[in-house]
Length: 506
Image (cartoon, rainbow, N blue to C red; front, side, top):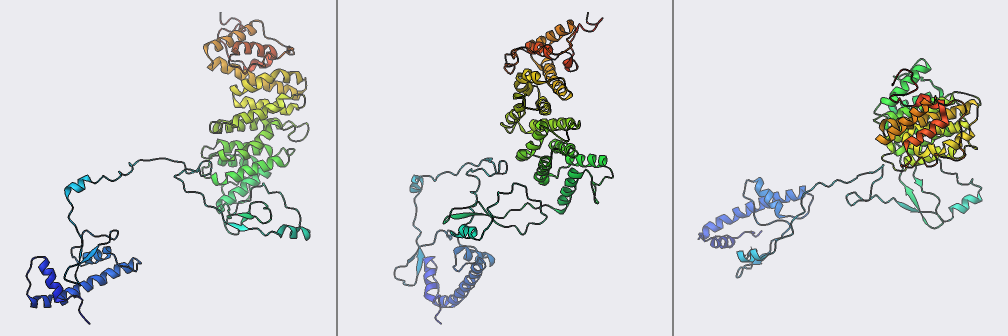
């Protein structure tokens, strides 16, 4: 086998570095140089093989040299392949073309484009569970598509298949395992077109959360806790306090929140005449909304219907019962908590709730007294601003509808409490003019000894413009005091120097 490195090559290299080597020394050095070169190449091939490459790079050669404690090569990289030129007069000798570069030409070369300045740019990963289409976020994955058979629908019709059922709006039961899900096809597609296939998706719950959900569901339906565990109570009262304390204080219930709200809505809408479980449902809703660790902002469509239904339903429980008044008060309290927490983030939430509660008040002849009472309670729970802007203009039409029955007396008391809260708010937190106007109206009312008996309803509606900002608080107080008389006395704010107290304030 002919040697790769000859003594002539060694002599040529020695001449290039101004070293005169003896021919015998060149013949003795050539085999050793070839042996060392073969070792380096073999080690470099090992580096290339371990890098899962079939070609050799200069980085592999440098790694082999470093492994043998030899000085690596400089000036070459895998990105810039070296350009070898044939040496004149030596057909087997090659060298790298390395021309001299003047400093003037380097200074005349334009500078490269500077890199982008390092900065921190925040962006939203998800908003209400949806990924926004921003350049920083990866584009959503395109679901796979499959061709729908053109004759599948006619064939099914020929064999007498039942019509397509409406989509089940009920939330699927929580599962403790994530297997067995079936891909869903997004609706019927016309013949010959492609059908969109959605990836299977199932919410997985741990065994502990599944057991917790089962026991809370049993409590909502029957009022008792059965089985072993921490939430077992011997009596209904102990069960109520244990479950409500857990719903209002536990921080790990966020995975169960969709199922709990769906369960509350399902049980509330199943039978409104079953009054035994409605107080538990409203108490559970209030506990979930008061838990600071739970966020129901994405589940308002599940939380609002049972609360609004309990407030403005025409009848709750059996006819003639009295327990439904407490259910309506609990629903109003829970609705006020919901709006206080989530109305700042959802601009349309409070107006929608106000419109829903104002609907029975706007038609008091068609609405029963129970619905009027619930609507008044709900608006009063939302605060003085809602009462003044929505309830106050509708007070006189409702009072014309109210008679002397016990249910209608509750409606009158609810209206008096709501408007008394507005007067107390104006007297405590309003401007100087508003406070003075309310105080003057209350003092004048008490000086004339109040008013007893049925209200004197005006022919017109002087409170129709009460929602306006320029509607004086003193004028509002005069009209309200004349309408309700002694019914509003318990809700009036204290006024300094009241004349009604004999021997005081003089």
